[in-house]
Image (cartoon, rainbow, N blue to C red):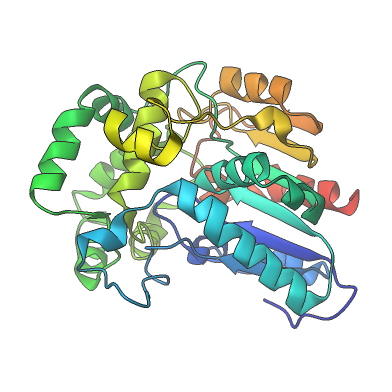
Length: 333
């Protein structure tokens, strides 16, 4: 976003599940957080998780190989995220950075900082937007409930058909989005209904005219195992590592059940921000997370009753409702 130089504060933006770095810049200058940060004098970095449209390279495997997709947010957190942090700090010649994560981008920090304690000192402030970690109460999204209740069926179906990737970003999907989501189409209402089903109903903050444009960049692909991992956490109500079954668990963890991510070990300062109409990141779960974390500087609800899971990146008034507040928080650290 801007040329790095010594002394310039670094901000790392991490997108959510099936997303990409594009999601921080789709609304344009004066509207997107990335542009606001760059204009505010920050050195802005935007990372992409493995498996999305920008992160599909491997020294030995290719995306057509089933083994390529054998990862979840755990691997992103303990291998990829620290590499990104270290590289950003090396290039910028800084000792610590600000971190802003959305959805799965928050999960990754909770995993990393609980498992690799030395990275707590590399975080000036972590701003968690729509935090996802603990499941004191379950999400209310129909698709998530369906996946959780029929986990074995869906996993078996995908495994039998050697499907490891979900929701890839393709030209076909972009054309389909233009065909069914554009203004004037009789199916545009279905697109809006789908967005409401996935993220919560907000009739005022989504600009329906740009739906085809947004769906050209989202989803951007990811592994089925990431979705499985979340489904496991929701089913058990426990924030834990991936469950491979008793036999494989013994090989990997020397125990029947996966180890729990102990968020009480996290010492980095966190700002937890959630939307009142977000069916994934629910208030009871945020409050429980805040109770367990050692260094919570603030827990805040976005002051707009319809604010949902995708509004954090795509709301028309996100700059006023949210981003200005983020800028204020970052200046304090």
